[in-house]
Length: 369
Image 1 (cartoon, rainbow, N blue to C red):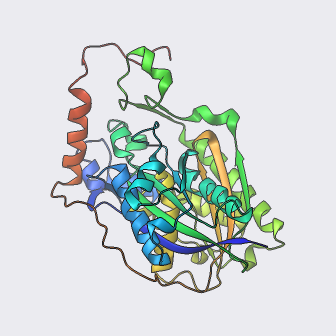
Image 2 (image 1 turned 90 degrees about the horizontal axis):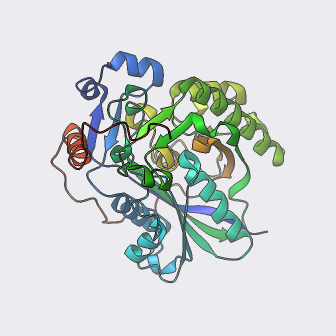
């Protein structure tokens, strides 16, 4: 049987750090308020484009696998913050990496986009369509954030990460997964202003209003991820006692702790980095995976459990067998362009760009939508 082993991994985090104290200068909030409710202390704000973040992460993942761009047969780009939807983001990475004529497509299931992409690429390798794949999770959330809404502005950050999958006869990579969606609840997490439905209503793309029903999202996130963990483990006749490390989507520390309790995995076997980065949507899971490897939390042959949830409301869990190698084969020189601006400066620049073409006296563009 053919499997799809993870042989390379790489991340890219922009250098500008936005702390909770920084946010308290533009919002009615505090470090204590944010940490007590979310577990987040800081997040990253990017001065670079989404494509640039993804390119650097991808270059590092390829170097870790000992591959060149020209070796690739498939690129899957998971994101919900596209720079372009036509053409897709994956084709831009293909061109930057010199990966012609690799297949390239985007996938958007919000925060689970990388995990759904991992399933898609694994399936294409298992069935012999391709022999290897680059799977990316990258987001540039800051330009789409409503920086006046403290319920959501404190949660999200920017970043990117990628993994390389290669065909193998060894039992590695994704062993089992469960994908699902609470479609009837999709309206409890909606970003008004991102999408074609607003184009004919005088809404400037990127001027957004977030519909974010936190308590309802919490309930469904915990239920969906817990059920997915249970079902994916049962598909390979395993239980929580067999899991070496849980690497969950990092949206809220309380959600992570609740899922760990339901999955019957103690917190010492759960990887958590939400304090440093907040929720980076599709980038969150792969960045957490990269850091778990870098910090020595993933040993050779480890069994990993990767639960996630996102807008839609999608949810998933993947049972992954890590290979024997936990050190990269090579290093990439790819890096983001230099930045001297603070995270607050970057946010203020973003707000100025949004307000300049807008009439501040205009009626609410979302009224009636």
